[in-house]
Image 1 (cartoon, rainbow, N blue to C red):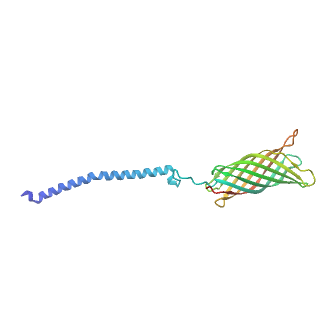
Image 2: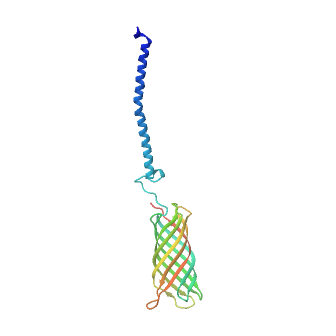
Image 3: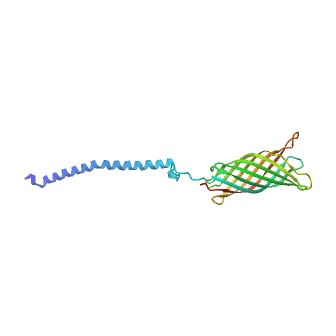
Length: 236
């Protein structure tokens, strides 16, 4: 009679429920472990992307790097004015107009190499004109700047220089031989377009002026301010 009572049925149901609860308890750990592994993998992947720069928008490993703003063929011309000093007592100091032409290549935002041709035209009393010319190779680096191509630059270089004296009043003209020259410039590039910049520059140069065997050489200095119009070609 007890076998047909509800008590027995209740016990059976309670045992089945206990077994079901235990089965659910045994099934929970795999689910929790899977969630833990998934979250850990996501955190690890995020950390790897941060360390490799992926989270900062850098190119993925193996992909080509984007061209920098100062990279590529460069061309500029400039005009300005300043002063020259010739150690010959007949000339000394004088005002001068300056013209410059540059062509070269920017290897990166940090270094550009270019050839430079510049000339100073100085005017003296008695209709005398002195032209100072320089042909130099210069290297340039950015002192302070950004990745858009704006910044303060320093260039240093060496090459050849000489002078030509034009005596309009009837005296004989004179051209010196070429001599070693040293040049320097401090400029600021202001980008007004993707590939074009205005670059005011403070420049200085020096070279000796040979006077021939048996005579000491003179010295010629030039300094001033020039506005350069600078263009970078795109890199393909």
